[in-house]
Length: 451
Image 1 (spheres, rainbow, N blue to C red):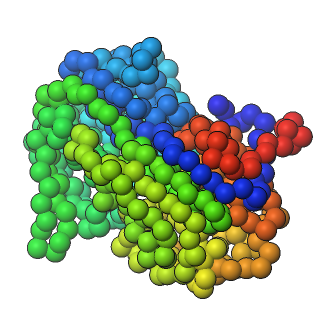
Image 2: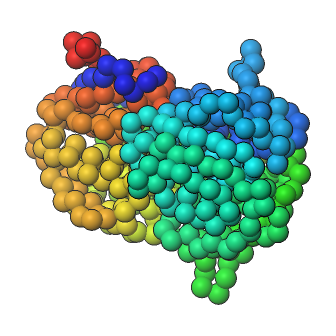
């Protein structure tokens, strides 16, 4: 779906409890990486449970453009015929990544150390997002980069013929920056080292080892993660089963917690400890959440998460927890609106450079619906328990998580809540509206707003 099409205004309102056992789409981070690592392996990788969102389909098309063959089969599985490290083909046209920040940033790492020239473009939202924190370390490999002012898309990379290994200390917690450097290191002779002062989601490390890379992770004397990768391995094709995305599961979980009478179970959700900060925080707030049927798949912990309506209380969320829940702060802010007292969220600078300035977008959305909040440079304080929540229209800034979060707000508000454009939800959670309606949510599309 192009975000230049007519906006889709959607309104949510309270009235029904939410009940049911549901499954959310496959994890987006693992889906992107499955396609990319499959393309860099020699042979056929198979993938079950791939998230078929616009973002991930864009990555499949990007890998096809450089010589791999990604395709869906009649049984719903996907396969990737990989070309192997060092064997990518130069694409015939610019590659359009749509709204996919993960897709384009990880691909930049791959392209930087292959001797091909690639131009990357994106939609209006992605084209406004800064890419310098990825492109700057990639320049150290010898790659040539031409980008719009401020290192924004469109951007062209000519990969180095003789890439240079290097050691990089990640200046701010970012799994995307770490992953881009490691992916550049794959086709670089010698040892590439990434030092990560604050641990972030580790899917790249786990999956690279699973595909046969020589990668180790140790802690130095300062307690920092030191990731060491030996370049130019022969990656082996794998069968990958993608677990449910915890960032997508966050929306029905929070909706159940704030909607009276609700009891919802989300099945088969990824429980990687670098992704469960929201669950930790909600439990601290007094949420009735239980983890059932815990098991392991492909080296990752998964389980069923059951959430029931709860009386929540405000808490302080420490800055060091931010990397494990960075995408969940918008919907946590919605939960905080129904908690007693103040919820204080610290260390949120990363939210300024997401699909939108999410910190500002959340604050404006809360204010539009009568919820007291204070926005700092890298903090947000939400005061729960307002007497007449709702009634506003939220500007989503083409951000899927802003749209879904405020539609969740409306399910428990005193007055309906509208979002100006729900179309971007398709980038990560295309089944969001029918899934929520199936549990009892009142979501209505306002056809009259489309031009």
